[in-house]
Length: 347
Image (cartoon, rainbow, N blue to C red; front, side, top):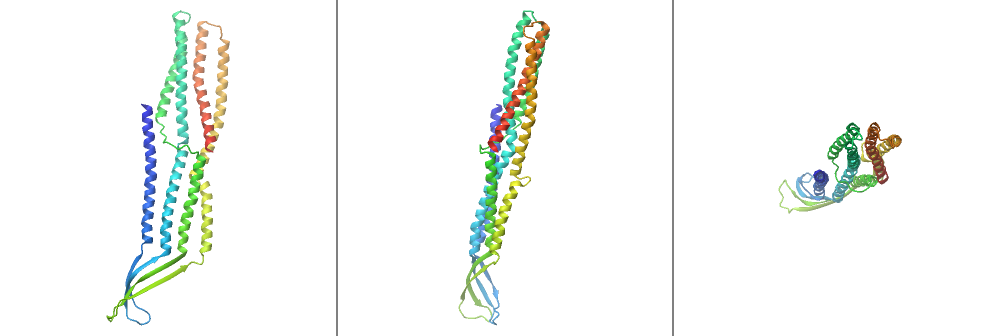
């Protein structure tokens, strides 16, 4: 039942993530489509004009279009696609950073649960063997208490571990290494900036076309409506300098996003350092636990062949403590292996 609930939660979380990306892409695409239609559709013009040559007032009407606007319409859609791609790569990388440790911790808890089950099975065997000694009146019942107390501790640890497993919901993540996701996200940053710079540079020139007709207003003339047409070209002489600054800005933006505090690349580096520090600390703790395990082994060996009631009780206490200790040792060994594997596979 737990696995079914967990699977449903994973599917639900993953579905929400996909809906988020689809909704954002639809938003930016529709916004860009509106701007595209505005830019590429000719404008209708109408009005009154008073020629400065002394001619009578005239009414004019017609349409005007711009080559630069048509070019910007195409580039606007490219910017939208780049922004959509950037959002998708950013979300995927952010989710890997956000859920890296919860995913590792969930695996560790599941492994700990298996260790607890193994230790409990060994305790059951020891309790059964000691019960035979009690029935044969070779030892008293209090000698079994350390084993029963250890079983209670393991049952309590099992319950706590099970609760922690069910409280950690991690969405389905791709198998792409985090380093590749970060590179893809930073590349998308640069590509989005390049698209925006290209769109911005289209403002430096224009080729406009206007066509229409005009007619005299006063005095009312019997002359026919006359047509007119106009072509104009404009160019900003700073185009080359503007382009150079935009290229430099794009490169600077890429370098900034790689080290920006709060951005996903920076968060990934913090995660790498955090895991590295955790490994260093827990390696020292594991060495201490293994030393304690060796001391218990030596104490048990010293009791070998002694079958008095006190010796059996003390040996049971040592064995019970060792079984519980080895759950912690196995848990820490698996934790370290999992953390090292994550660093190796993702950085």
